[in-house]
Length: 109
Image: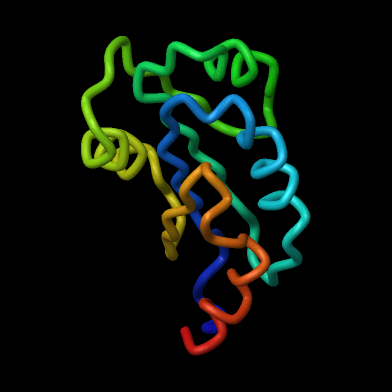
């Protein structure tokens, strides 16, 4: 990885992910990387209790709430507007993709 990169912005669009969001955040935080992590979670109008879980995160992540569901693309645009990292990765909240793959993904960069 280039010595220029200092921060990886991890964009996490969320919609009704109460059952996975806490575990996902734990996994994202546990991934060892040679750069700092900026975690941005955009809740896109969840109605299942996800928003309440996110409210307790404190400084662990930047949490942005959409008042109503506007779609994954809108959530990603909102997150991109707040991203400050030299590198950006999108991580779905449903655990379909494993954050442990970040080092392999970023290795060639």
